[in-house]
Amino acid sequence: MNLFSKKSPKPVIDVVAAVIFHRDGRVLIARKRAGKSNAGLWEFPGGKVEAGETHQQALIREIREELNINVRIGKQLCKNLYSSPKFDIRLHSYVCKFESAQFQKNFISVDHDRILWVTPREMYRFQFSQADIPTVKLLIRL
Image (tube, rainbow, N blue to C red; front, side):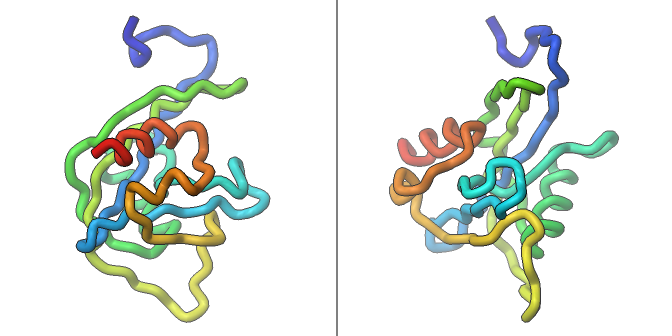
């Protein structure tokens, strides 16, 4: 059975995530801020795809809003379905290349309280949100 074509009584939300690679092979991960959904858990930054947006447009918008980072979006790494009690999430993860950051002295991410650059093999040390775990497992195997 194809998880992406099954009918669900719950709303389905399309979400994109950026697996941002730095030139040294490390990947950017971000910890959700207190008061946010999945607070304290690590994730690949991204967010909901808004009506009329492509995945790429949504990802560029979300990464700029959340982190003030410019990325070049590459191929889709994976997609998976995560089911929560209230809705289903179709998570589409994309390989992205870090291009530049426009860090400002007083810049504070509205969604995250920490960001780190880690190697894929170091990811097992962090507690990731359930929706991101398939992507983490894939990266560790690469």
